[in-house]
Structures are given as structure tokens and as C-alpha cells.
Image (cartoon, rainbow, N blue to C red):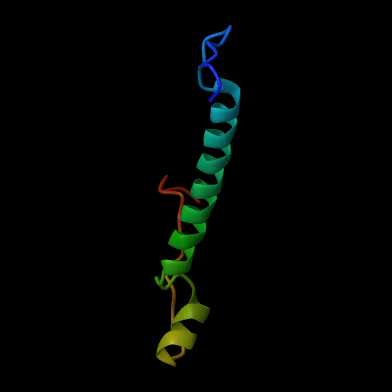
Length: 71
């Protein structure tokens, strides 16, 4: 058996590496969550969506306004 050797410097976590890994994982998880939410979104948003989902033609649509009451 070898004799135990005491280290010259204190042992501590590598803060730079930990911050880099945490930042990378945070970005990857955020992007994955964005794609998952977009994939699971099954709302009808356009007239083409209505025609493809229901098989019906759109007779009229209400236009989107800016809410200021003007032209």
C-alpha cells in the first residue's frame, strides 16, 4: 500500500465548466420546450386550417383591427 498524500491546493468544483454546461443545457432545454409546445399546438388559426380540418369552405372572415377605431 502507498502512503496517503495530502493535496497542496484545496479541491473545489470547476465553476467555469459548471456554468458553461448549465448554460448549454438551459438553451437546449428551452429550444426543445419551444418545439414541443409548437408541435402540440392544434388550434385553428387560418382559413386553410378550417378547410383542411373540417372539410368546409370558409364563407366569411372577421378582419383583425388595431383597436383604435380609425381607418
